Amino acid sequence: MIRFIRNIFIIPELRKRVIFTLLLLAVYRMGSQIVTPGLNSEALKQFFEALQGTFFGFMDMFSGRNISRMTIFALGVMPYISASIILQLLQVVWPYLDRIAKEGELGKKKITQYTRYGTVLICLVQGGGIAIGLERMNPNGIPVVLSPGWGFRMLTVLTLTTGTIFIMWLGEQISERGIGNGISLIIFAGIVVGLVPGAGSTLEGLKTGDMSPLKLIFILVVIIAVIAFICYVEMGQRRIPITYAKRIQGRKMMGGQSTFLPLKVNTGGVIPIIFASSVITFPATILQFIKHPIAQKITQQLTWGMPLYNLLYITSIVFFTYFYISIIFNPQDVSNNLQKYGGFIPGIRAGKNTSDYIDGVLSKLTFIGAIYLVLVALLPEFLMTGFKVGALPWVGDFLEANMPRWFYEGLNVKFYFGGTSILIVVGVAMDTVQQIEAQLTMRNYDSFSRKGRIRGRRA
Image (cartoon, rainbow, N blue to C red; front, side, top):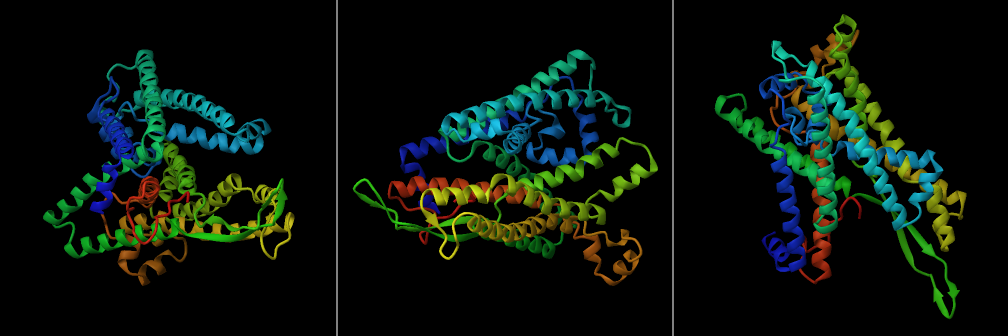
């Protein structure tokens, strides 16, 4: 490890890229300390403490806790991610965008430009909604906005939109002149910053007696096991053998090589969890503002650990895993490209049989990937709140009476530990290390692992 870090700073170009990346991440963290003008910070803190586990709490995690403090980076990179996902979905239903996306580098620039326009539009809408919502916040009779009105609304929209555009620019600069994917590293930085106070509160529990040493050891073992499990699955591939037929091109004999088509176990990454969390937590957030017994009962059922929440969460993750992969990966296009360049899968006829075979293998991998995402996403809820089986109709009391107490009450773990956040942190770290290793290997320096290169999620 020490030799690996030393080699990074030996290479001038790599050293400049790493330092440049760290400096821009530091700029992002400094901007996260600037609060949007015109707000009562104490009243805002009281309001967001009541919204943990809702859509706002989910968005707050990806913004580096900027939403709960309403900084100039409160919207974070989620508008950019949302615009990118919308553009990907539109490419399937809009032939014009699909044609542009296939135009190479020029088409990629146009898609990026449209993504930026979409980001600004989403920021204007979300910024306006947040400004109006802040004016209506009145926790314990204390107004959040000091001077409500159109002046505050326009200032808030301008501040939040500019903040997101600046973050988007930082991410693009990191991707171009730094190391790693800029947007992913910004999300990574926001999540990692929250781990420090989370670890501090956990250690504080040892002093107060809320956290026993045995429970702390158990938590550390679980975290290490989850990280190892995520690394193992994220690097998992199903390699389909591909053989290219020999052909004469000019005076040269081309083809005859054997390679493979790598299919990732978790092709969709963390996107299905983001979709599922948004779909589940958004209704709960809206229903919190409706003062009706039925709405309050539904809101209670959509909280962490409740059976209805878990059922909808699991179903949504599985659905969006298949849905998203069906958008980003087309077996028919892969089959056509193989046939175009003289490639084939041994024992499988070219054309429709090849696409059906690839689709069958991908469907099995997608199911495994969906189960993997469900396990990672539900683990923190189990540790913190447990599964409230007592709320099940008819059989709830029976299950609660015959199951261990820790199953339906959880371990009361007060630690900043979320399956989605750990999945993002581990994935981004693997991709960044892979890029650094590529730079070191290209210059004949020792990489992180002497036994072989680390494969990132995009390997």
